[in-house]
Structures are given as structure tokens and as C-alpha cells.
Length: 183
Image 1 (cartoon, one colour):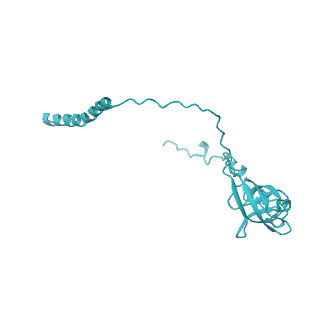
Image 2 (tube, one colour):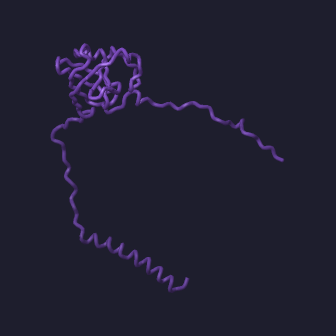
Image 3 (cartoon, helix red, strand yellow):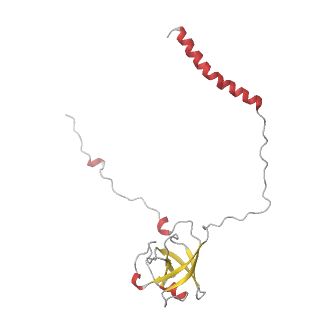
């Protein structure tokens, strides 16, 4: 490289760095010190947020299901038992506890959502036979109800189940490999 080229390279690099160096100096001259924000100490204890999700309230028609589905697997993986206080709902998370109130009789029952349904359009919830009997709708088959629930934030047992590492045997071991003999 010639002397002129070397000089141009050095000046070019120096010229590019000079504005960066000078801009750092000018900032110090015009900069004003800002005080740190004041420390705020709480005056009263704040209520901790509830661990559950928001309250869900629905009003609509409920039906019940029982003998035809007895012993079948539900969407949650449980075996359906018509004598337990369970229900099928299209959107509430599985495992959610809900209170269903018959608007005609005023009777309520607490159920666990463990299945998806109802399959009939326009209905909000399908109750097990035991839950339907508790609120006095088993004979009619359908009733206007109010559903109140707080969906769970943590997953149900089936979803939370940990997968264990399988103990599969290796496909090949050192003794299985062919050996090459020197020739």
C-alpha cells in the first residue's frame, strides 16, 4: 500500500470516529441531572389477587344425561358415572367447579366440568343424572338454569401428568458393530 492510500484509510477511519467521540462530549455539557424517583411505601395492605380466573355467569337451558353414557370415557379421561355430580360444558375448562341453579325451583348443585357437550344446539350444559335430581329437573329433562363458575388456572390431572422417560433399549451396542480386521 502506498503512503497516500494509508493516509486516506487512517483519515477515513479517524474521520468516521471523530463525530462519535465529539457527540459523547457534548452530551455531558448540556445534560441535567434528574433526581431518582421517590420511594413509595404502601399505606395499607393490598388484597392479593384471587388464584382463580374471572367469574363466568350464563343463563340458558340445561339437560341431563345418564344411563346411555354410563361407563364411557369423558373428555377429561374420567369414566362417566351418572351418580356423581358432574357436567358437560362446551367451553369451561375441564376440572372447573360450577354451581348450577334451577331458575324455576331455586335449587342449586355444585358440579365438576369433566366432559364436553351438550350435543343439542342451544343448550348450555348437560348435567349428570344425580346433579339433575338435586335441582329437581330429572323428570322434565330440561330446565332454565343459571351457571356460575370460576375457571381454574392450573391444568387438570390428565393434562398435568408428567411423562416419564421410556427405558427403550439402544438399537445397537458396541458388540453389535462389525469389526474390521487389518489386511
